Length: 275
Image: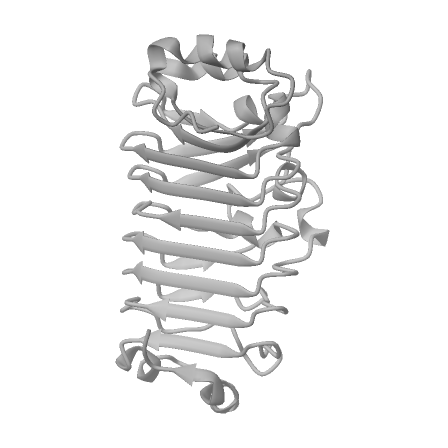
């Protein structure tokens, strides 16, 4: 059942009625938090598989904890989209000391789209591993002020990461950032399963990652219209042995890269200068 177009004024009533159905298996819905935040609590016990959250212009910070504490977020939610806001600068994930830990138990896909003011994703007394234990696909687009994506390095099951349209980021992944600190971080594996990384229209990106950030499972690297990019995250001690495709556009972007000669020779057989 898809509730995307149900009016906000009756949404809570609809959720309560659905809760009386014994054999309901899947619900798809969207919520504009400015108007309908409380209605989500009425849906806490529904088998919601896909949820689109349109954030509130009245909020200056968006707390994902408010969603993860609901039953469906822990048991049935597989796709989550957060989108369309011009004011929220931070998404915060926090573990409150007085409440038990919560996670998006089976969430497989997270999309963050068109959050024009977003600069950071903050972690407070929790970690990507505990909040998103099964996330395999992360997509971020038109978050033009986002400063880095370092938290994504520690997602234990992440296989695909797509990032598009940014005007501020100079380095995508770093171990050293004030928004990237939590207990156990130093012992966490970095990108243990990432197979595909796609970077498109990242206009200020100079380098993808620090030299100590590795990509042991990377098979496909797409880079398009990242006109300032000078460095790939590879040297002779961290060659991507699993890499099958390095796709770059335009062709000049390959020529402007600063690579060790041995690294360049290693990458060239897999190079594709088009999309």
